[in-house]
Length: 361
Image (cartoon, rainbow, N blue to C red; front, side):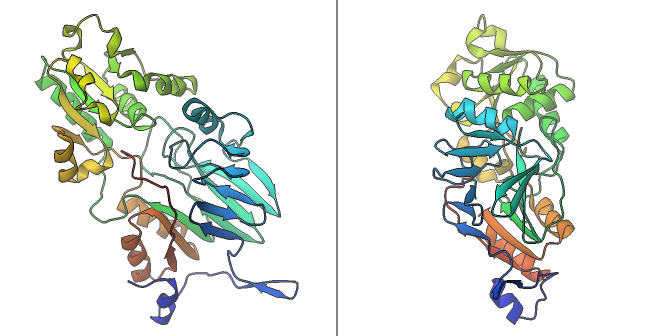
């Protein structure tokens, strides 16, 4: 595999790489003001961090998932929806600085930050950093496919693209969600005496599945595990209509749940909680359901390939469309995407950040 230094030695031509900049009598290498550290990306002139995995005095947070957001920062800059999610999940609140999509914030040290939609979950953002004539995009987690529960990804020109690679292997091609929702509704129709129990991540995935069911014409009550209720209410407070939702614990009887769709955290699929349901057919909504072994390990009868991350085509397509001078790849399957960049004559490197997990996507 060719790394960024060996790529040049092998005859690969970097695209539009910025020239070294002269600052006074010193020559500064491109992007030297932004430094990947094991616990996050450090914006050196502003002494701020992006998605740090430990408390810092000043953090810019791309979205509310626990591997990107946490409590304990002195100041947290994020979109209003992300700040609301963090307050709900982690009890944060003090030091919150809201940044609306498209709003530019001066961080100090000559650095400006602009939050742009990432299309991952409610409030998720890419962060555009501008300094000394260079433009850096940190995508956070993102996807390009439509999602009725969040603002769509905003393709933005930059000199350096820092991209996730959660599904950074060619095998990961996510199908259109309409087909997966159709499978879910077909399973319901074929099992009228059972319920369909769908495992879905509590932030983002659950609300997307519900919204897509509504778009497909399913107007019946959707029943929720108690762990889902608060986040669904927050989504509705932010303008995402989810229809009639009720808690399984409020069902008048087990019989009332026959023919119903129930949404629960993935951990509840085989938990004692599920015993209160009538002969459940277990489903799981995740990009990882493309891997049959994962479905078998979880005992999933109905795997639904529904992802809130970019698949291989979206990752490579985004890099090609943005066409940055350099690409940094993080938290995922970096090796394959790094190799693709080398084969397409794009300068790239993998980052060694810690604390970023696969989640249940």
